Image (cartoon, rainbow, N blue to C red; front, side):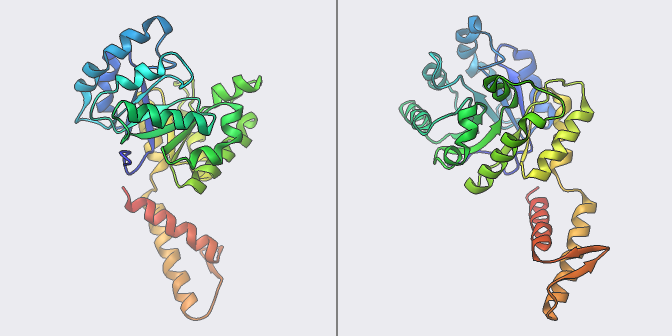
Length: 282
């Protein structure tokens, strides 16, 4: 069962230790929110945060689609996190996925907790996870994924830059793996949540690469992600004109046409059809 929203353009995180922020998340317009037990929750507060999950869930359920990011499956907290997952979740977000054996462990742990129906969003954010992305995203428990650039570069021993040159290969690899596995993949975080220009630029890059949406760590990022990953009325209108012109030419035996100064053949027409379908999905 896949409980994810039809469109996964934005996934907004908030710390499980900040109930004030969690309660505001339904007003952001995010497609999915994640109550975060992992990076945003310090070690000394993990037990307290886990114990408060049910109350947090009750404060937002029915107003927004909700997920929980648990701790890494190799940590001491993972099994208890899964056991504490409240009813009504759309998904569970599992960070630092690296191996098929690890995903088998995730599936077994969810099953033992009677939560086997939950959709899993897998975080690929280490060298090994990125290297084996195609195999990992094809695992039957995975229904979505995200690229964690900060953790990936930390694992690589590299330096994170605004250019994104250092993550270009990994970013592309995950987009390709998601396409082959037919699961939506979300692009990396922009840690400087005040830099709207960078967030929009990265979102546009990610959409062009085939990403479904973007991770958000601040409510202001949500509207940008939704705007970028939703085809505009102008884009849709042009795609419809292109398809009409191309199909008319094809019916007359012409395989390539000049459309508004652009050469259009079947691959370009396929892109236009995909855009129209994406817009129809809402």
